[in-house]
Image 1: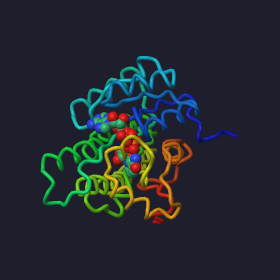
Image 2: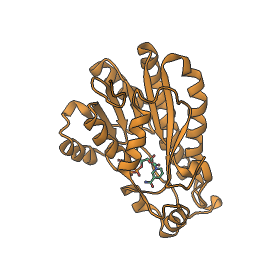
Image 3: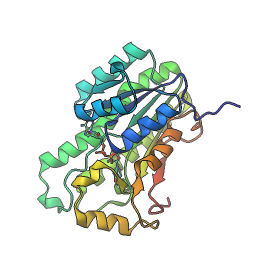
Image 4: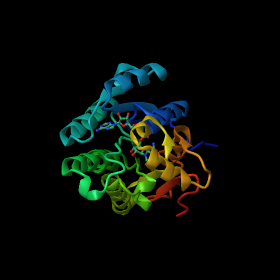
Length: 251
Ligand SMILES: NC(=O)c1ccc[n+]([C@@H]2O[C@H](COP(=O)([O-])OP(=O)(O)OC[C@H]3O[C@@H](n4cnc5c(N)ncnc54)[C@H](O)[C@@H]3O)[C@@H](O)[C@H]2O)c1
């Protein structure tokens, strides 16, 4: 019987691949046979990724998702090189200001967080959809956050960007449902990754206290859910936000 979670013969683009959840996802995708094309704005992290997973130089490129033109060029480059894109995983993200009241947040900080987390997701989706429509197949997975469902105090830009992603995914899913394309989100609670190095102690405590499993999650645990949503096995679920929150959000 065919294992629909297998990626043999498939090209999977992973954005935000250099660290944390994206990096763990690259590992799992590779294990399951995918040809991974990895993007990140951190060139050093990409170099380390290349060494860790024995990628060749055509499989890593720098990309800043907050720049629409770069997104357009990067996806066009993948298509020229690989001739197809079976799945897109977008794990690029930034926390933005934490432990700050809304009126203390500068608009430049707010806008930057929206550009990376939300606009990046929109621009990537705009670029891969025509390719996937022509293939009559595609899987898109955006990593959002529990913050987008529940809202963490002191993190207005992040909450706004992540709930924007959830709404975006719901509507686009319905637009492309008849075309062999699914688009879903994955919403982690606090996960042990470099991203949390910047999160204040107070915010971290607040988040762990709300997780019934009483612990942070691991990047590999989130990668499992992402890989399912990025695979052929995820054939009748679209517009959904999968929860990876140790029981914090059961909806
Ligand atoms: N770690 C958590 O607790 C947690 C919880 C909920 C949601 N998330 C989300 O998961 C995703 C991955 O986070 P992570 O914890 O693995 O963080 P991370 O910082 O370990 O990895 C994020 C990656 O995205 C890259 N990146 C950042 N800005 C970028 C840009 N403008 N263009 C391209 N790449 C960029 C970074 O260089 C990094 O390699 C993010 O969207 C984050 O919001 C994380």
